[in-house]
Every structure is written in C-alpha cells, then in structure tokens.
Length: 163
Ligand code: HEC
Image 1 (spheres, rainbow, N blue to C red):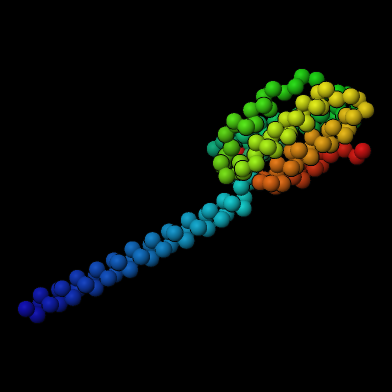
Image 2: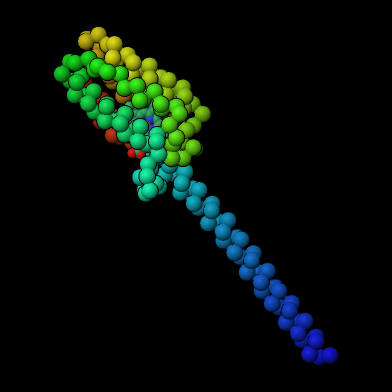
C-alpha cells in the first residue's frame, strides 16, 4: 500500500516536470520566432546577400542590371549622348520574384510605373533635357527604395549628376 502511494506521487512529480519542460520549450520557441521576424524586418532588402547565401532572387538580379545600366547611362549623359536600345528586360520589374514578398509594399506597382515612364523618356530625350531627365530617373529609383528598401539608397543617390 505504501509503495503504491509513493509511486503515484512519483508519477505526479514526473508529470509536473514534463509539463513544465514543455511550457518552457514552447515559450522559448515563440520568443525565438519573434526575434527572428524582427531581425528579418529590419534587414529586409538591405542585406539581401546574407539572407540568400544560396542564390539571389529574380528581382535582386534584375535590380543589379538596372543599377549597372544606370551607371552606363550616367557616363553617356555626361558625354551628352542619348541612350539607345531600350532595355526591355526591365519591363519585368512587376513580375520578377523578390527574395521576400514583404519587400513589395502596396504601392510597388505605382512606383514601378513611374520608374518605367522616366526610363522611356530617357530614350526619347532631347539633348538639352538629358541631365534633367536622367536625374529624375535616378529619383524614381530612390522613391521606391525610400518606401520599402532603403539599403541601396546611398548607392543610388551617388549616381545623380550636378545640373
Ligand atoms: C518599384 C520599386 C523599385 C524601383 C523603381 C527600384 N527598385 Fe531597386 N529594389 C526594389 C526591391 C523591392 C528590391 C529588393 C529585391 C529583392 O531582394 O528581391 C530592390 C533591390 C535593389 C538593389 C539590391 C540588389 C541586390 O544586390 O540584392 C539595388 C542595387 C537596387 N535595387 C537599385 C535600384 C536602381 C538603381 C533602381 C533604378 C534604376 C531601382 N533599384 C529601382 C525596389 C525597387
């Protein structure tokens, strides 16, 4: 009789121990997740590379070639040359998959349309308006980045030309 009592008391002790362990585990896990999502929010976009060690998103790659094309255009405009061969690949800006869907905020398509309009203008620009049109294009890149992805802003602003 005495043995039975003590064994059921043992069971209770073991049971409470397990419950406590489970509670601690669950609690730990949920705070862990919370920290992760905060870290992800604050580094979204600016640290694309470290978030994707196994490959860059379609949108990130497109952005890089948009950036390269802007660097080339910067040189052309300084020499007073109107760019030729509109980069049709950039029309994919709305459908290219981003590394994180949250980087595409609600106004994304408004910003991208604005950017594409300015881009088209560059290829039809009168020579005397080249610089103004070019700087306004750079500003369109910056507008979208200010809204959701401030990481590359410094790099973008460096490409503005003195009027
Ligand atoms: C409509 C919004 C929008 C416009 C316009 C835009 N960007 Fe971006 N850009 C993004 C988003 C969103 C990302 C993040 C892509 C990802 O991580 O998948 C990004 C990423 C980048 C990156 C980082 C790419 C990498 O290596 O991970 C650079 C550089 C960049 N953009 C430059 C530019 C330049 C230059 C322009 C203008 C020619 C421009 N962007 C126009 C939204 C925009």
